[in-house]
Amino acid sequence: MRYFILLFVMSLSSACSMNDVIVHDQVTKQKFDLTDQDRDGVIVARERCVGTLTGADIDNYGCGAIKSIAERQELKILFANNSYYIEPQYYPQIEKIAVMLKQYPSTSVVIEGHTSNKGSYELNLALSQNRATAVTDVLRDTYGIAQSRLKSIGYSFDRLIDTSGTPEAEIVNRRVIAEVTGEDTASDLKWNIYTVDEEVK
Picture 1 (spheres, rainbow, N blue to C red):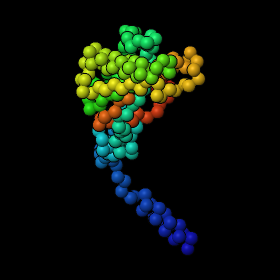
Picture 2: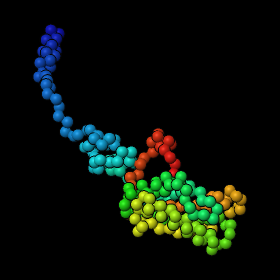
Picture 3: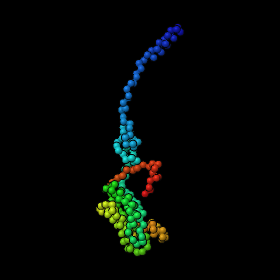
Picture 4: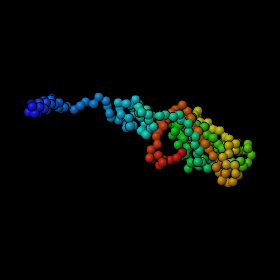
């Protein structure tokens, strides 16, 4: 009896070993494209927005986030007392505004002039207006920005940021602000380890 059981088990095991073995001699064709052609971290099979700007913040489908252009920054221009003449050394700061306006042609800029509270309100109103206009003149005459995209406003000392009355306060209150706005949009760039090395605006 044991002999027959042993013979039966051996026949079963030999039958299993005789099953057909499938050999793949061809490369399996990938059904989906798993490459990342625009290097945004999203494979082509999922990509909905090809050619995303490098460094842009993206969603799961590779579409970059956009934001409206609305940038407000102070121009570090030092004016002599009771003067609105802009020294050439400050032109590079104005050029940054010009570059942005050229990059986004549907934007415009408002240049705000501010003064300290030394002297009469009327005198400072005219002075702040002249300082703001001096900046728009440089944008137009030196960098070729259309006058229709430029506006200047003088605020006299209505918007002081330091009311202590010190000489240092007078310096910080004599300032020019550029506010760029418009219908254009810009890619929202994501934070990376090199962001800290970029110039802080």
